[in-house]
Image 1 (cartoon, rainbow, N blue to C red):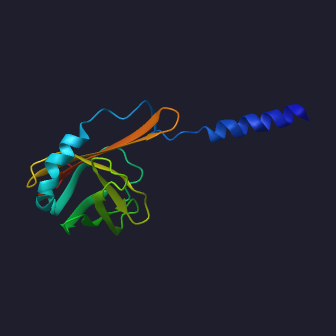
Image 2 (image 1 turned 180 degrees about the vertical axis):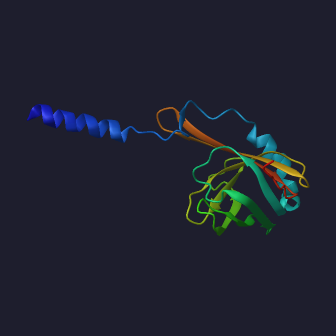
Image 3 (image 1 turned 180 degrees about the horizontal axis):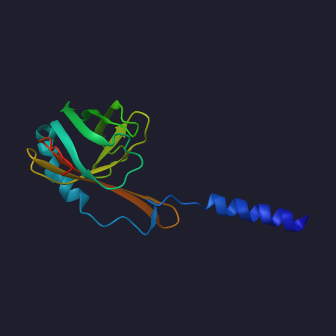
Length: 162
């Protein structure tokens, strides 16, 4: 009986320790977010507009998988985000959200879409007219983190299989 109980406890412990493959040991890379953010704040109105997603790292939370179009409007404090694209089932999907200063005062923006949770939104580089490189990294307990990256273009790119 004790052996069975021990076995069940061991199986439960292993199952509970299952970590998704996008959560890895370590810490988020050091990025001078304060300098980036201070430089970008006066230019936030120029960031508004349409951005097409042309590349991203593996992101299981990104529900739009293809033909992603993000339309950002700036109200002076935050961006209202309206995104459309094709989901994993091949259907057109629309998502609404916002991009706003981090609520706890961290020196970067955060992204908050309905049906998801708030995540860091760090603009690593942009010229406000043609491209934008976005980075998001979250640290967890016990020395783990996950990070995701996106590259946006102001021009729609069509990829063909040849």
